[in-house]
Structures are given as structure tokens and as C-alpha cells.
Image: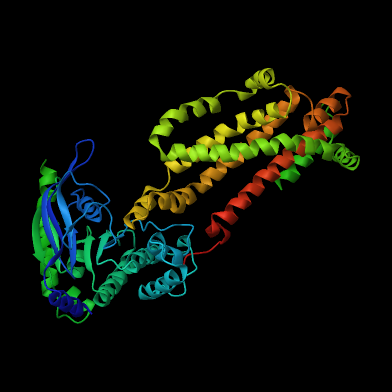
Length: 270
Length: 244
């Protein structure tokens, strides 16, 4: 499963599809969230943004999404400058952001509905992606009838359905319980091996970042800067369990934890 | 159940009796039948409903429209919100003699009385509902390139609808207060006339029957409104599902 991801990533080359240059963001009230962030996100790969809490990971993701304006710098997606949300990017929200009054089908098709696509076509596409995320049989349910993990599957299907090249995922599994999360992570890797998307993934879990991504971007404490980029390709391993037990996986997790610990210690000394 | 308790307590209190002017529940019910059969109650209701329906209609259209606009536009909020906050806090019944002074004792004055009481609560609820629409859903709509109009029609208004409808229920209830006040204070017509008349001739059972019938009627209308909301805008509330 994951070796397919790795191969796909290699064959896609390492041309950056998303390029972030000199991004700074200062919130009203004077909090400097990001300062001079330069980053390239290679096409067809999953890059995790990891860092101490409050380092501006989510802010950076929302700037890439066009939901927030940076104070300086620019984001380019496939060579075009980002001025707002666009059809080549789709967002998966931490709190799912599902319409409570709409069925699973309508929620999954909501991006298409906003684009003015016909009802029949919407239904068709929604059905396809509902199956992809494993929610067949729940098409006519409402979000409050679903568990947290299932709701996020709806959120993922909605982002997939608009057929964007870049998926932006903001701590998608943080509101999902641990066992569901593991299953979901495996399913996500499988799905990405089929769908060939570029994914930018914000998380606060080191294990999750190392397990899922081809590279981990470590951000420093506020104001967020790029502190280190760690390649984490674990390609060639057969099963998810093998990855989780491999020496490379464990070493990488340990290395990143060592770096993050520095920030925590500095915080305590302050 | 709570209704049965109240009626039971009323019956006992009526038999004690607390006061000569306090009829028992069964006397009141009997008076209600008499008045229904001789046509005086239905006719009174029709007369009362005329300005009430017009007034509430105006209040809903105008109130929701204005409230939603205020919730969407900061400039409009700055312009209009203080007026309605003052109106809601003010004892509007005090203005009713003023209405009579300006608009006389006709239909206009009564419609206006209904509107004055109903509009502020409808406006303020709609405004608060829209202003507090879930920002995460709004952002979601933006991220999928929804236009401002789609954002308003497909996300903000459905999300705000429970609070808007709560405001409508309060508004309808306030409209009933308005019409009864107008009928008691301006000129006795409809239910107000029945209440005044039966009080004057000491038919206390009839007077209570008139009062209770308008109270019950108002409660029924308000709860019907809740049903309309669920059917129209919140299909998920029709299902009592359990998560898997």
C-alpha cells in the first residue's frame, strides 16, 4: 500500500506544486504567527507540518488555502499566485464543518453544488466518493447520526469530490479517537495511492506525521519559521504494522521528538 | 400532564372559592361551549385575527429581512441595532395610547400595536442568529469557492434558522399581547370586547372562557410554527437516530 505511495511520489518527480515564499502573518493585536516562511511542497506527496502548539501551522495552511491573507510573501500553486480559495485546492477541517441539516450525500456533494453542477452528476460523484471513504449505506444519514471518525470521512469525501490537486488537511484526526484514527490513517494512505493527490497535512502528532508523510516540516515556536525539513520516506515496507515497527520509523520519531523537546525545555526555562 | 394539573388545581381553587369573581374550571368550560355555540366567540376571534394576521405578517417579513441584513452588514447594524434594542427594552404598552392619538381607533392603529410589540424581538433574534452563524461552516463555504449569495442562502440562513424561528415564536406571542392590549386600551372589539363586556356584566365564567381561549389559541399557533420550521428547514430533527 504505502510503497505504492512512495513510487507514485517518485514518478511524479519533485517539482513543487505549492511554493510558499517569504510568508509572514501578524494577527490584529500584534501576535506574530509566522515570519519569513519559505517552503516547497513536491507534487504527489504528503507533507506534514509539525511544530509546538501555537507555532502557526494552521495559520500557514489557511494562508495556502486562501482563507487568510498573509502580511508579506506569496503562495503559488502550480505557478499561479494565490489570492483566495481556488478549485485546485480543497480543505479538510479539524471540526469537520459539515452542514448539520444536510445528508451525507448532500454534504459530500456540497462543493459541487456550489459550482452549480447538475443534481444527477452530483449524486453520481457523491456516491463514488462515499464508497471510496467506506461510508456506503450511510448516504441518507445526517451528521449527528455518525461517529466522529465517520464525520471526518464525509469531510474527506467532500474534499475529494471537487477533484482538487492539492488537499489541505488541518489536524483532521485530532477529534477522532485513537483506534479509529489508526484505521483512518491506513485508509487515507490507501486512498492517496489511488487518487494521486498532493497533501499538506497539519498535525501535532509526531507518529502520525512520520507514518503518513514523505517529508515532515518542523516549524519553530512562535513566530513560526521553518526549523527543519525531514525526509521520512518509509517506502518499501509491506504493511502498516511493519512501518510502525521499522527502525527507521522509530528513529525518525525519536529524532523529531528530540528537536521538539528543545522547544518545550526552552519554554519551561522562560 | 402539566395541563391536567393546572386544570385540576383551577377546579379546586374555583370550588373553594377564592373569590366570587373566580369561576371553576368546569364553569369556564361550559361557558366556552355556550359562547362557541351562540357564535359570539368565533365572531370575536375573526375580528381579533384580522389586524393580528396583518400585523404578524408585516412583522415577520420586515423583521426577518431587517434582522438578517443587520446580521450581514456591520454598517447596517451600527445604524439600526440601537433602535431595536431600545424598543425591546421599552414598555411598549405605554405607546399604545400614543398610537390612538396619531392613527385613531381603526385597523391601522391595531396593526401598528401588533407590529410595535412583535418587530423588535423578531429583528433582534434574526440579527443575533445571523451574526452568530457558525464561522467554521462559513469558512468551509468560502474554501469551496461559494459566492457570497450562496454563503448566505445555503449556509448562514439555514444555520441561523433555529434562532430566527425562536424569535418568530416570541414575536407571534408578543403580537398576541399587542392585539389584546390594543383591544382593551383602544376600542373594545373582538376578544377584547368579550372580556370587557363580560367583566362589566359580571359573567365571570364567560370572561375567563374568552381569556383562556385566546391564551390557548396563541400557544397552539406558536407550537405550530415550530413544526413548520422542522419541516421546512431542519430535516435532521425529524429523525431520532443513534450513532453507530
